[in-house]
Length: 415
Length: 105
Image (cartoon, rainbow over all chains, first blue to last red; front, side):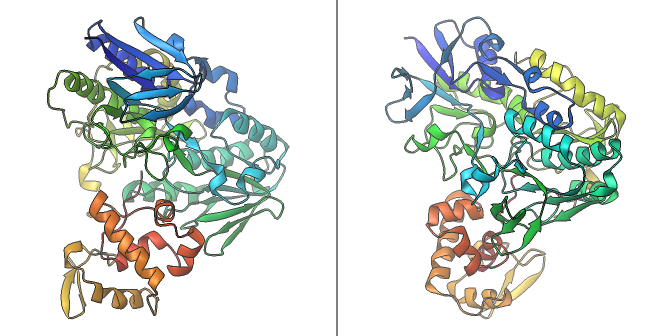
């Protein structure tokens, strides 16, 4: 009997999963990707838009054209999933029954979770660079800015690309130095965490860079309200940070249809998932890739890439009635742009925090250290994304599990 | 590993005072831990949150974030901050005798 794999979401995870599955599954298994539009956005590029280093149009390509022959594409929003009836109800009124469902609809911004933020984002004083229109609006606002206080605020974790707001802070410092008015700009990084980053060694390095660039750090600040007219962020415990311009990363949640699908998601719309097998814990026929999962791994494209191999192997095993592999180790790899043509690279997993050394082996890119080479790596990544990562190719020398060679593992904090 | 004495029993804690073994916790210990955190008396609402934290930990292996705590317990985030000033998720976890909630990075 014909089997049907339905993949919700044609972004990073959904696309690479579809292309990898097509190579592994026999022709009588149909694979269909569902997405509400045909605009595949290269999300890492949004960071560069506010500084005039990338144009939003250059970051978008057709979703369907990234899919290989033999993968179906259905352009419709999802109304909800009936996890007992094993059927997706689409907004266009049709339904898609499945034998395996892959949730790959990522994370969505939920500004409505924070008092005043939805209105603030239309005030011209408060921006989010996590979507193209906000990033373009911020570019214009930064160009007009000739001095004052800028607050860069993460409202709550988890967020997509947790290092992006820190990179944004570094690039803002660079941007105003280029314009020759850095001394007229006060920069404050406002975070709910107790440091710039959660893991100790990396936190020390990034905090040091922030200090060196004269960027203030306000920690354990849980934003309860954004007051655009009064120009202040107000925390739940009554602290305030004033601003003339605020760059706010709103609360993230899963895609809205998850909330409309009984039993599928948690309180924030993320899908509970086994962190080793990538099978959801809500139903055995539902698998999850990328930001849509409730995993403690970072919400980042590199994670979706490394997940791809285990996910596909396990879907093939599941359809054949074989046991699943527990091989996903939480591998994450991020370039951290630090301004002035330099970047850092971090590589870590569930068990190992980011440490110094080299990647992917003793000879390679320097880890947790600013270098020109890492910046070039970050720029090259865009090409790699469209031509290697989305087609679902393994990259020679780059394995799904985290490499240990080249890492100074003794530097990890003892805890 | 450091240890503390609550309700006459020695318990293992981490460097920040979170229980290493949630199995060592008893309800009688909570008022004393709370007092160390600056909370003089535990109201019924405090207990509601503490019991919810224990339940979440048993179910999921980690304490919830403040936002998830609010959404599932029905107590607003503002109220949670009034109950457990300076970080409800961490403070409630400590008083409930469960490990520090994991970060999401």
